[in-house]
Amino acid sequence: MSDPKAILSVKERIEQRLANVAKSTTAPSSKRISTQGGVFTLPDGTKSPGPLNCIVLDYINTNSYYDTPYNATDIKPPACWAVGRILEEMRPDDSIENPVNGQCAGCPNNEFGSAGRGKACTNNVQLAIVPEEFNEDSDILTLKISPTGITPWSTYVRSLANAGVDVSQVVTSIAFKEGVSYPTLTFKNVGGNNRVDEAMAHAIQADTIMSNIMSAA
Image (cartoon, rainbow, N blue to C red; front, top):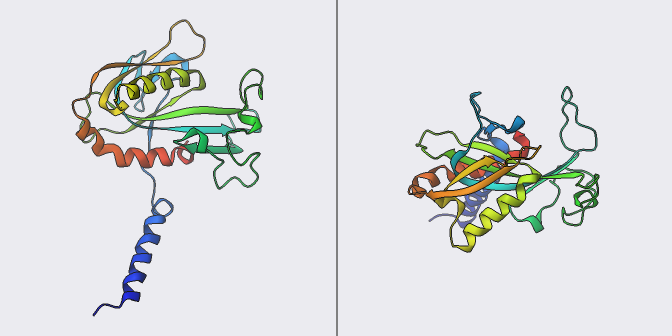
């Protein structure tokens, strides 16, 4: 007859191992698409003016605050950062020893006007995508939406949700807004994704990449 204490011990060990997976393994690497200069630069160096048609597998919000000016020759990590899916629940990462505020909401660095007319803390959205014509070997790519693109992104995702559609169920065309000085992304639904089940085969890896997006940045 099995010893209940032994069974419990095994269960506890399994739970502990699962909880430590992120710490004991290397996170899947993300291959980032750059939008610098108003062009899409793919990980292999290919450049395109767009639009970029893709399937959005996952997305996450990131906040990052730097207490020193940007220096291209001496890049430092943010003094404070947060990653989250629910904006109202976002809070500084546990690694931040002396956060200015316990939550991102209400933090003075996350208020408009804390840096000129903008925010001292930069808000971004990170996307995990695969090309429209993806296959099982397709790399998951990441794309950062700058603050100027967050409103178009939010409007786009909300309009889909109001129609009962998840962003993964459509083909999204991502382009640069014309007539603006700073690269600003726009988003358009250009048709249904008839391969949702196949796309979701990448979902676990996409979720892991999103969860580790700041450490990989």
